[in-house]
Structures are given as C-alpha cells and as structure tokens.
Length: 547
Image 1: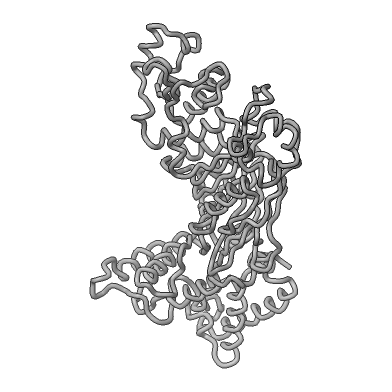
Image 2: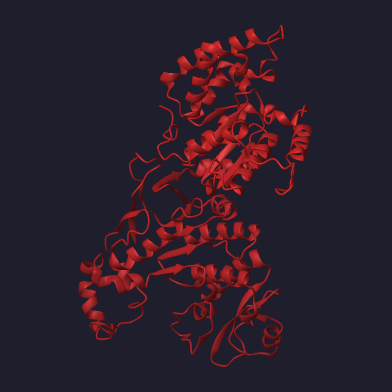
C-alpha cells in the first residue's frame, strides 16, 4: 500500500534526508523521549487518509503503491458484496458499481480517504485496550468483526490462542454462551477443546464458568491480546502502534516484539517504542525488520536508518551485551568510559550537576562502560553509526598506545585520516615530554604525577591544544592523568574499586550535610561540562563517519 517514505532530515544536520522503499513488514522507530516518534506515527496515520502532511513531525512525503484490482476486491467495504447498486459511500451515495469504475483513478487522491482509512488503525495508549471488546449481534456467516472472525475460523483462532498463551500462559476464548447474543473475550489457563469450543454443551459451559472475562483482566492482558488480536483477526493493511511495551514487563515486551515482527508479513506495521526488549525481540525473530532512530535536539531533527546486522551484534556480542549498549539507542546522548568504576564516578558527577540545575550537566544521557581502554572505540563507533551522539572518556595513557590501538581511537570518533599523522606525531611528543618531566627515572609514572601538569610553557600549550582537538571530535582524555586523580582535595589514595567506595563516602550522600560535595568550578565538573558542550552541539564533528 505504501511505496516509499521520505523524512525531512538525515543522520546529521547537513545530511541528505532519509528515504526508503517501504516493503511490507515491521518498521520500528526508536530514540529518546521527545524525539518525534509518536508524532511521526500520527502524521503517517493522517497522511494515509488525507494524502497531506500535518507537519508535526519529521515526515516529509509518502508515496502510495500503484492501484491494483485486488485492492478493490479485498477492501472490507466491497468484499463479499455483488450488489452493484448497494451504497458504499454514505456521504455521496456512491454505489459499488460507481466505485468499481472510479476506484483506480481516485486511489491516491483525497476522494478515496474514507476507503484508505478503513484499511488503517492507529493504536495509541488507550484504544489498544479496547481492540477486542464485546460484540453484540455479530454476523458469524460473513464475519467482519474481530471476535466473530476468531470464532468462525478455527485455524485463525488456534494461531491467535497459541500466540497469546506463549506470552501470558492463558488461552483467550471467545465466549458466545454466557451472555446471549454477545461475544465476549475470556481467559483460561487450560487449553480449550477445539471439538467442543463452539458447541453448547455442559462441558463447554463449565469451561467458560471457570474462565475469567476480559473485563476483569489487567491492562497488560488487554494490551497484549489487543495488539495480537489486531494482527490475527483484522484485515488492516496499515497498523501503527505507539509504545506497545506499555503495561508489559520486559520479558513479555520481548515476546511481543518477536510476534509482531513475525505476524506483520504482507502488511505495513509501524511501531514507536522506547523498549530495548521489544526491539530485541523483533530483531531476533528472523523476520525482516527496518529500524529508524529519531532524535530532536536544540531545534535540530536527525534520523538514521539502522542496520539489522549491527543490532544483532548488540544482542549477541558478549562485550556489547554486558555493557548494555542497546540502551544507548533510546538516550539523547551516551558517554563511554573505560571501566565500571569510571562510569559510576562520572555518572555521579553528572547527577550532582543536574540535581542543582547546573547547566554543565548532561541531560537525558546514558553512561556506559567498556571493559578496558581498547574497547571504548568499538562501542563509540557502533553507537555513532546508529546516529547516537557518543563521547568517549579515556585516561591520559592513551598517548602510549600502540599505533593500531591509537588509530582505532581516532577512527571511532570520525577524525579524518588526513589528520592522523599530525595527531600521532604530537602524541609521541607529549608522551616524551611527560616522561622527561617525571620524577620516575623509567618515565612510567607520568600519569600519577599530574600528566600534562608536569609540562610548562610551550609544551603545556601544545598538549592542551592537542586535547582540545580530540575533544572537538568527542574523545575526551583525562588531562590530570587518570580517574583517581579527580577531586584531589578529598585525599583518596586507593585505586579502582576501593577508590570508588572511598571517594563516594567522602563526597557524601545528603545534600544538606555540611560535608556534602557540591559542584564547583574546575576539576571534573568542568570536564563533564566539556563533554556536554560537544554532545549538545548539533554541528558537532565526528558524527558523519570516517573520511
């Protein structure tokens, strides 16, 4: 039904807009809060019937597929009706015969909006709970409503029941006995006997008496079955679902993601989600899934098409999975530190900045940790490839890395290869100067003695310039050497985990206490501010890939 979709923006503020051919199946929009995911779904829904954008989101254009005769015959308003004089458009008294003659011409125009609307459904936070409501006087000979369809079609009903049971451990049953003339949805932990499910027998009556009507079910039950009911019991060609994970705990959201992806098939299903679990379930299903990440920051919208193989790597690679990298897709920005101790400390510093309304704090950010310095660039590069502004923080001993590891750092943050040679030469000079000024004859203690603070005059100026150049691309090197040298006034001498416990103890936990450490000028507080300046700059360097 939809041939192509074009947005107004691309991966960066200067990129070409994202555009794709819209094959049937599942398309997932991810991104941080207020990135325009729900607005895009709303505009898609409104564009579909009216063929015109409301300009509320990053949607720029939608092209419909050319008309096919099957579109007319399979349309719910015309299917099963051979009466050429039957009125199918109450507003104009247009008959089936009139539409059969003009449907092809009007298919993509304003006049056919009512018929295109019949093919689409917008499932927001409320109506998903009401998808399988009671049906009175339903037609079971030519069923058109969801519960009637499920009751009349044994195969369809069995597939729906199996899908719901896999997530809820309860079977959905269409109760046609309890309330005469009305179809109700009920749930039972016991599998119904297909041989008696549609028979008026004491056995079936007892089975229904032991079941629970959906009116008494939780919102999670209703939402889950409502979404699956739309996929199994309706003919909608365009299905839009906003936050399907609402009311669901994470494992169930993952199961639902898998089922939606598998059942989308020949329909266009669009989902806006903030759930890594739903996303993982969909990608892991093996079905064809398109994922688009949206972001809106300081008046600048961006969009990036994500690669399914990269997403699968997020889920299967032990390093990436243990680092919770996938959560970065739903954040405004990400900071990757060397280790868990680093991550905890920098996150606490940022939390204190935000708590006091200090503009140096990074809003809506996720702090992640690699497992060592050499794995920082891998995580940074993958997240940037997916359109996530991602900064890396490394200790100053990065200057001593071997050439291959050093090049990986530069490439990960998008520094052009034309700059590599000069930056590498400067790196070697800075390392030499720090060793020369160290009190350690071996020169190995430079990062414990102040790092670039060992330098003076021209050497210090050159080192600071080098650090700024790296920071321009989102690679932040600890200028005082390493993590444990921040907040020296607290006089914590330990290393690693013991240092973290001691530093947190001395920083305090009660903001009202006299010894609580509040944000101050300089030191790590300004270091985080530098990270924030890069992350919030729409024109930041390093997000366009390696040149």
